[in-house]
Amino acid sequence: MTQALTTPSSEEKLHSEGGMDFLLTRQRKFVTVYLPLLVFTFVLLFPFYWMVITTFKSNDDIYDYAKNSPFWVFNPTLHNIKKLLFETSYPDWLWNTFMVSGTATVISLFASVLAAYAIERLRFKGSRWVGLSIYGAYLVPPSILFIPLATMVYKLGLFDSRWALILTYPTFLIPFCTWLLMGYFKSIPFELEECALVDGATRMQILTKIVLPLAVPGLISAGIFAFTLSWNEFIYALTFISSSENKTVPVGVLTELVDGDVYHWGSLMAGALFGSLPVALLYSFFVEYYVAGMTGAVKE
Amino acid sequence: MTGSPRKSLLERINNSADALGFLFMLPAAAILLVFLTYPLGLGFWLGLTDTKIGRPGIFIGLENYQSLFKDSVFWLSVYNTVGYTAVASVFKFLLGLVLALLLNQNIALKSFMRAILLLPWIVPTTLSAIAFWWMYDSQFSIISWVLIKAGWIDHYIDFLGDRWNARIAVTVANIWRGIPFVAISLLAGLQTISPSLYEAATIDGATPWQRFRHITYPLLTPIIAIVMTFSVLFTFTDFQLIYAITRGGPVNATHLMATLSFQRAIPGGQMAEGAAIAIAMVPFLIAAILISFFGLQRRAWQQGSKD
Image (cartoon, rainbow over all chains, first blue to last red; front, side, top):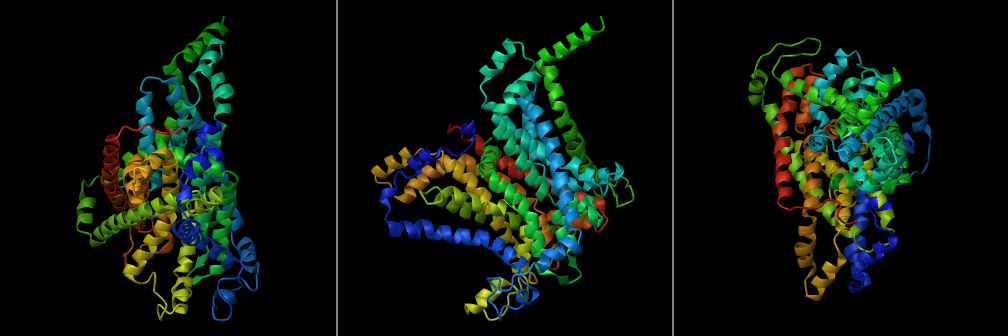
């Protein structure tokens, strides 16, 4: 199943990419490869660096660049974090985001596994057409749907509740996960299923005992993607939730931590940092799956 | 007696691909039909009514669209959206391609580099946008501070208070967030190109530019088409980055169609007008999808063929 991941084994990589490296001198390689890479790395990571050091700065240092260099923390303080955790509803937001993302992910995975298996393997009448419309569903952006969804959510009595988000997030998670899982199911040999069918297994048994165990990398990819996408979701959470304690992290940080014209940049950055850490951690454990899922979904 | 017909029904379902397929599709189809297809239709309908928050509307035909047609702020948002999408997509593509080509070299710590460079794409957009907001602060901007120290400018830049500065600022933040996605996707495409092609071309005396133009670029076209379709779609319908950094200001200078739609519909209460603005995005999206679809048709291409 590792072939399904996009990265070839490290040995293969050396062969395929080191091919003509000998034509480059070391100095030339530094100027044409490492220097531009360094610039990219600096630009892409600087906002995070700035977020982290602002979090640990005292207010004196945040608003006075003359005394101490702004690029380092000279008097580290946990004041901003303490303020965030104990004087705002931040822990509630974290918990809400976690619950909503987790539940939406589980629902979406369940529906997507069944749908992907049906489209890819059962080959029922019209399965090709259904597969295409799932792809089409992925191309419908939330910014078009949020207004009619808001009226629906209100009519269903779900306004300002977690269920408003748990039920609407699958609209973008299911198409994505189904599409991703279809690619994984495609890579499982038909012969395995045929053997099981001959031995008298039902379709459900084939799915749970043969296909799913073989598609674990795909399930992990789909799961962490679904979780990350829900964690990052903004426009539905902004529209469907109104009371402070029900908000999710991205919405809470943006709407509640700014009071009037006073921006508490220290706590704002702490809020951004702590909202980013869970997905960044999840990401760091499953980098290969992320890359595989992302490029797999694009290639399908 | 009672057990056997039940069992045979189960068996019949189990043996019919159509019945089982229907059963397996049910959860996904139910959710998508109720929360995606229906609201899409409802959106079209709302755009033809005069619904306000807390008041169901009546059918008024194309009046919303007629008034939008004469609304200069709406047209400003259309121009902004098109410009934002065009400029950001071009830069995301060019810089993403350069980064992909760099990462495709034989470099030290390659997978580590690839991992950390994806971070801007992983982190919630709103939260990284807040970091940009702070870096664009009119009094404490670190960018202005560095430029002043370097002697290139003599006063702090008003990043978000000036129309064009604000437009450039949000576009830069969008490009920053989009580069990793383009780069890593294109890198996956690059890794499928056989090195023997480059070796053959080099032996025939091809310059690096010729190798790129005649090997890399044609073989990468299909994946470029898909990646850029996604990038264009998501940029065109972008909401959170603008909402977090400028909320459409100063004086509507950075309003996109999505942010204007939100502002009119939710804080403004004019649900119908907001829905009409959102629906006005649809023709653009369809055009973008069709362009990429026909671009793809030109080249029969086996997806994931590298294995």
